[in-house]
Image 1 (tube, rainbow, N blue to C red):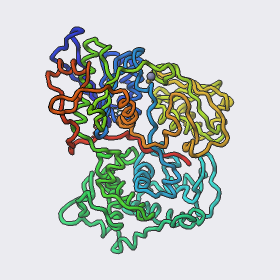
Image 2 (cartoon, rainbow, N blue to C red; image 1 turned 180 degrees about the vertical axis):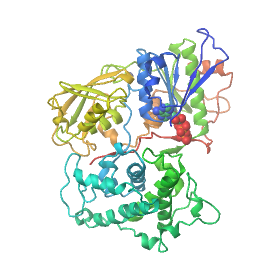
Image 3 (spheres, rainbow, N blue to C red; image 1 turned 120 degrees about the horizontal axis):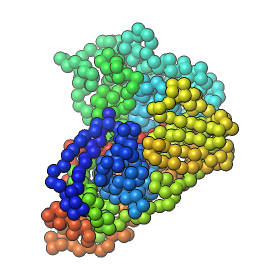
Image 4 (cartoon, rainbow, N blue to C red; image 1 turned 90 degrees about the horizontal axis):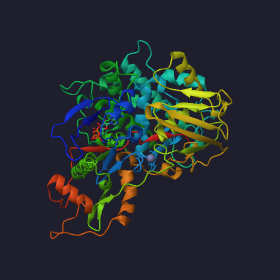
Length: 591
Ligand SMILES: Nc1ncnc2c1ncn2[C@@H]1O[C@H](COP(=O)(O)OP(=O)(O)OP(=O)(O)O)[C@@H](O)[C@H]1O
Ligand SMILES: [Zn+2]
């Protein structure tokens, strides 16, 4: 469960701050309805310390709707930023579109992985969620091996018969789903063995037989459990020494306690089987509702093992548990001093807001390398952008093939993933689509049944080229129009996801870039160059120390902190703290 601490600091007068603060912690998802605009209006200021773009955009929209000042922040290694956002006075967090999350083509993940990250993302986003996640969220994307042999298939297309068993028909999907589900009365170890054989033996055998896929590279090699564990799965999982499997870890009991060690195929198979068993035997109530959590050791062990087995299939270098955890959890190691500097700057900006000094506000970017011996680049916040989705009146254009783009992709990828819409309400002529808690069961079922349909085939005439789709989200007080533009063939390089969003949305080419935006790094990197140009020449003090704080801020900081400016900061590593990139940074696209 996500947590966020909302601190309610009461300012007694414009220029003073009470020394006593009452702190109320809410352990919940900030996107829940209870934290809507009315709740936000009860605060004088919002200080964001979130680690994902989706939540940050959500809070930004609430802050704009409630007209509560927002101090946004993020760090990523040596980079960091603090930005300040006031409705109608400054740009909001979304006025500058952020890079979209890094995406991986689904066909690469499913059929032709060639990098360790492809195996980790496959294990985490496809296999883990398929086995332990919510069944109503399982799509064909989550079904490993379902379309093996149909490389190059596009969304909305039926795969052609390929003689390798890959198929995309509803019937086959049902069969696939059934093959991945535990059968009634099936012992967990039998289930784990069956899944192993399906994922690492049979699917690979089928795929390797499709010669057209392997003209330029070697086909994958199946793994056989009988060769890896000749003594039999049960005997291979016997605890080593006194250690026992726990609900949260199986590694120690299998004698694998070094997180930096790379596992052999045999050990990866043992961890895979043992971790599947542990979920079903020790945490059965959670099975069916799990999402990958890097802090759940068992999930990390499963993903490391599955990813290693997949890597052995494809002859890709494997990762240690430590490295796989970093990749799966999007962990980048934090620098203690970066976090300290950014925390200090958040407080400085908050004080300016509470003290009623909006003209002193600065958005500050912490550079990795001092520019003219200056680490911080403070700028006056820019003006709001009228074309902004969140604080202006944006009209977006969606270019796609309306006969193949499904409503499901429109909702989950275009609206939720790219535009951070929380609870979409869509209308266009007689067509309506709605989500939310207030719906009756039959309404939910009826809306869900529309998701697999191409948007041109939706009720009420569908969405065709030239249609204007009205999108709103009451939970974010968000409303905008989206013009649908039909385009029969979109080049894959331009539109890896099968659509192009224009307007206040990431540019298509940004989709290809490594995105660090959610943690702040992407933004910091983008701004770094700009700031280096803008940053005025500075003074070096007698000790040659780097001037951390400039001009107006120097004055405020001295007054408020009573401290001398820092020297030589940013050089120490903080091993105990990690910063995390966007949880959704690695996503999957159809190719
Ligand atoms: N939708 C959300 N609602 C509430 N809190 C959220 C939401 N999304 C993210 N958060 C919170 O944002 C915080 C981000 O902090 P941080 O980057 O330090 O991550 P962490 O999980 O606390 O620590 P680490 O990643 O270092 O292990 C976390 O406490 C996380 O729970
Ligand atoms: Zn804006």
